[in-house]
Image (cartoon, rainbow, N blue to C red; front, side, top):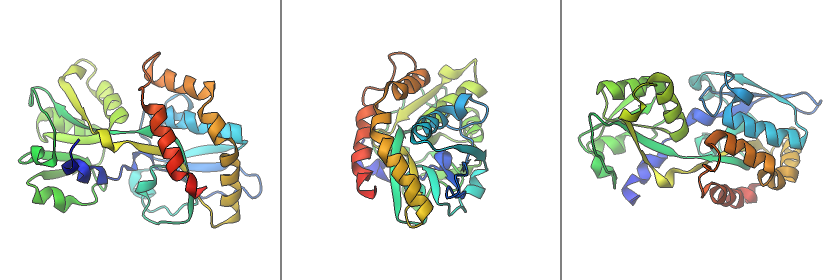
Length: 270
């Protein structure tokens, strides 16, 4: 992917944002707040989805009890929580945080094949003259797209973006890969093949446990996760969760290497 697409990666995907304000000082269960974004986070899915399953594994190993309360994205954006699970780049406040990657995700530019039978994306210039759909509040630098001749239309949900795509109201939309394909399957079970996606290869980001270290409770929780993280992420139990999500022998070959890279990068925050 050429450098021109780097501006696309400035999209802050709030889809994975999860947080809590509950102290563990008195051994109370941590109450996580999350946005519902299946298949990663949803109370309707086993173990709250992929993200929930990974959180359950590492928290259980660390001896940390928790529950999840789901909130709308707009309410979450106002959060200044001590404990967060999601992409570190989404945070507006840059507190002194320990960041523990537990998974990865990447983004995809979706299109509707009957409207674009074949489309290749090499740079931002290739989107000139088209309308790009994004989730409301996730595009930090809308002016860059407008100046490049790309119209931007915001929507409040993944479902809305994909319906607009199918109806031709927008030409493309950017979504987290797993969430986009999952939603297409739910909305258009008989015509899934009509949707196409272009992977943004340099959009890989971590799903991470992010903890404010400036309070005693945060330091204590971070220490417990740090002590068990490496072994848990390389365990058979972790592998089984991924295989259940992707399918047998279908885990992306580079996924573990990507996670290891994020681990190394953020280890300085521990």
